[in-house]
Length: 369
Ligand code: ZN
Image (tube, rainbow, N blue to C red):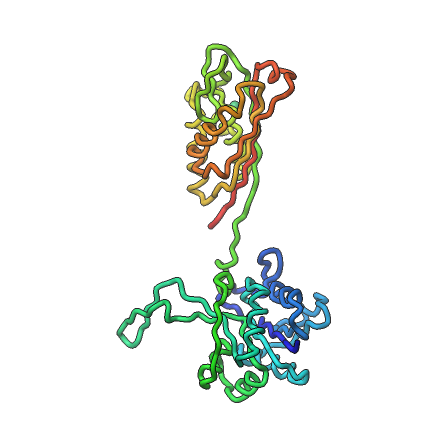
């Protein structure tokens, strides 16, 4: 094993953000640069990991293991790369991988593949095919390019040190990656299939993540004779129905409160006060629909919903699928993301004596922009 990896993180990242240095932005719970450093360490493939940064002092404070060496970057990417190659020359490396810290999503397996293919090649480069349709503009003419003839090259890229070093010294010019040097000098580059997930973080939009919140809802209504029982928006044959200003549907009321809780919008009574005649005998689906409509209109999405229906009777198992189907269509959520549990109370209290039904709901909601 005589492998070295150079992680380049000295770019200005102007396209990313005016004020935030991309490599230090927190992405998937750690700074972008640390994904590459930690994977390189965990792979146990490298004698040294050279990190090229414009802010070495900040990285030195992190106390990485000794084999991580931080060096200062140059003006252009190619200068930074050459700085690192000059630094490792004294160790007489066989293989060197060059990687952009802006690609934190590569796999350790990819590192292994690159190194193994270096046994018979001097340059090994991962590529993916484009997903967009590509036009090539030349003067005033446009040409359609065939997607399967276009290779988008990624990093890490792997090289025999001596070839890369010689080419980098000779070609003192700005390039966007090392394989460009090999191709321009008619050296053979061996391409391997890259990883689609290993995209380069370029714009701030690339790292925007969903914000997820949770809401809890609870409701209980008395059971009274001569009223229809509604649960989850459907009529269920039963000796009594739920008393209330509305149809008393405890499931839908608890769902409304859970949604409002997750988006910090108070409670059901704020929107449907029980002292207002306009809501007298309202069917609960008509209360839930505008709340859900407003949710989707504001770029929220529901991740999942879990419910406990607390009653002696009716038996939940008998109506579970019907209730879930109804809730699924009311809140526009796949029924696989909805769960309903039945819970009795050992005949205790009002619920145990079939004088009331209660429901509790928990919901997870994400906001995307
Ligand atoms: Zn209620």
